[in-house]
Image (cartoon, rainbow, N blue to C red; front, side, top):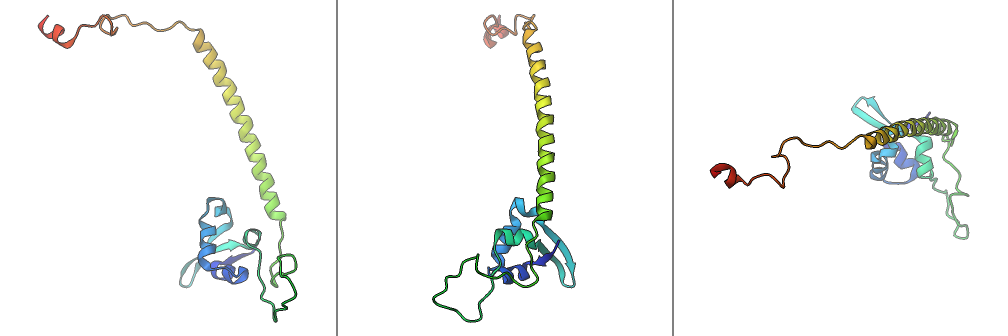
Length: 147
């Protein structure tokens, strides 16, 4: 998997670096962000496939043809960046399987808790044995102090 710095990502997409940083701060972006040690400290890097999935790459045309409409379909991708979705699909399939296993586990646990709840409802209700615990027969504070 190819990772590029945030500055390179901003240049590749034509967006501001702050926009790329906002994308990196999102919770669903965390698996695609890595911290790389550099000469001047730590650099955040982002996976190119994920970046270009969110923001398509931009390429400035050499000369602008006023009659041509530029859409993402007819803009050529940047040299050296290919969109390979195979690793992303593999990760998504693994995540789906993990979530299915979690659902099955929770269903079994829920089934067990429901059975336990049915058993508890069949038990007789607990009654207090002391008179003072019953609020209807309990004496007020002043009656208890002065009799």
